Amino acid sequence: MERKWWHGKTAYQIYPKSFYDTNGDGIGDLRGVIEKLDYLQELGVEIVWLSPCYCSPLADQGYDISDYYNIDPRFGTMADMEELIEKGRAHGISIVMDLVVNHCSDEHEWFRKACEDPDGPFGQFFYIRDWHEGEKLPCNLRSYFGGPCWDLLPGHTDKIYFHAFHKKQPDLNWENPALRKVVYKMINWWLDKGLGGFRIDAIINIKKLLPFRDFPADRDDGLCRFKTMLAEAKGVNVFLAEMANETFHRHDAFSVGEVFDEKEEDLPLIIGDNGYFSSMFDFSEKLIGMDARGWYAWKMPTAEEYKKAAFEAQAKSAGVGFYSNIIENHDEPRGVSHYLPEGENSDAAKKMLGGLNFMLRGLPFLYQGQEIGMENTVFTTPEQFDDINTLHEYQVALNAGLTPGEALAAVARVSRDNARTPFQWSADENAGFSSGTPWLPVNPNYREINLASQRGRPDSVYEFYRQLTALRKSVEWAETVVYGETVPYLAEQENLMAYFRKGERTLLVAGNFQNEAQSMFLPTTVKEVLINNLNCFDADAGSLRLGPWQFVVLAL
Ligand code: TEU
Ligand code: CA
Image 1 (cartoon, protein in one colour):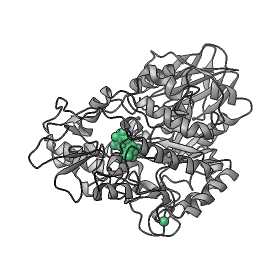
Image 2 (image 1 turned 90 degrees about the vertical axis):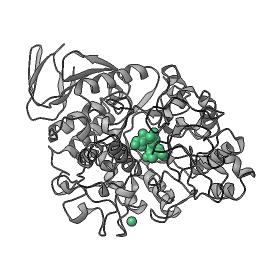
Image 3 (image 1 turned 180 degrees about the horizontal axis):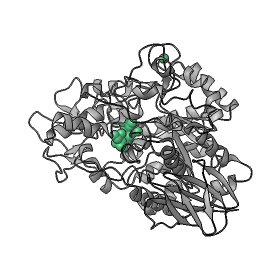
Image 4 (image 1 turned 45 degrees about the vertical axis):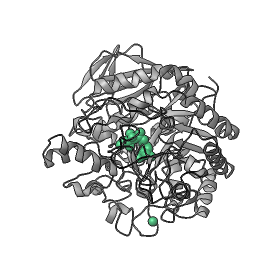
């Protein structure tokens, strides 16, 4: 495997709207990110991905872009963005933006022009079809946010357009070379500005099975999930290769794909030496317990399932490339609320989960607030949901016959809003996030969980993450932490997740995934305890006794 400039780094995702608000309008902004660059440097991150901050009506929180060449005034100005890129560099941080090109906003001028003249060149930027009242739609796919993928083209009664997500997110027609060309031009424009690269949104959806046709319905609504079509749509690789050659590869940019449902044999094409992307997220842990019926039917993952998914992903990517490893992002509940059993949210357990994930081979990606152990928030009424997908899934749960109370509880566990509450900087009002009213209420636990109370306190979750990022960069251990092979250890021992990282030297990473002590066999003597989330270390010849939720990184 070829060595890349970004391999040894730690990455961090910022959800700008909820990170830090500098002008009191309740919305986080780019100046807020600039102000916190010292903080990010202190934490040890060197790549920062910003969720979208382009002009947008924010129907899907910026994943509906109305102008790719401008910053939404709520987030700041282009001058702020340029300053962030430059100051980021001075802090040793590459700034990465979100690239949302499966669709744009219905308020983008391309779509406006397509509505004005569906037969003109911009009509070809979208999937527009003739349709008359009472007629069957071109296909029965269900959009990700509910309902059919088709809506009437604004201003028309006899034309419809296609959207995989919300109706305010019309899909771009990648079959059209003219569309691809303007997309590549835009990507290069940003890279020429000095941007470090992109996280590529929902990219697997750009290839549709054409002509559109029906699939067997999988719910009472007569519709079929999007995935079913994607499995049959061949040829996305052609688009991805072209995009990489025309853009990322020319700049040696960092790119990380939001890729789902890839075929295993395609992994080298996607993240190999000359891959379409530098890296892609490993979502295999997120997928545990999912159910096609809807969020309400999802099951919570167990420790054994988590371990199995992580080890399988490690095996798949070994010798091929780097997955980006996460326990959460802006689309998921908080990792500590999802992967740890209910009620087991001690600092020790949080550190164990974070440590096990961080030490895997690949690029560790922290999500804002993870480093201080932020948890799911509390929802007492459905009105508190902001996210369109959560509102939709609440309805799905009701339709399935759950009572309002049951539906609320079921959807609250996995709501995307959990990850979107403001960053908890301090115990001050609004968690120090804003002097105004935050756009989404702060998690009520901010007086207990916040950065100010953890900074400098050696046993805090925050200082634990700093130890992890420091180890990844240390002269002595970086080679092994970054490139060492992952070899699962005692994989059959229940609620124990342990693995070696074998490279220049050998590390043993072990986490006791339960609220009860357990002993594990030690293959050799321990030279040094590099990281330990508890104050005790109980090892003798051949055996290590791990306390509840204990996590250690050992030099052998
Ligand atoms: O998500 C793409 C995606 O596949 C979603 O279906 C995801 O699984 C869903 O958000 C779970 O609720 C990306 C973005 O990360 C997401 O925030 C956007 O809403 C979506 O694309 C549309 O741009
Ligand atoms: Ca603001």
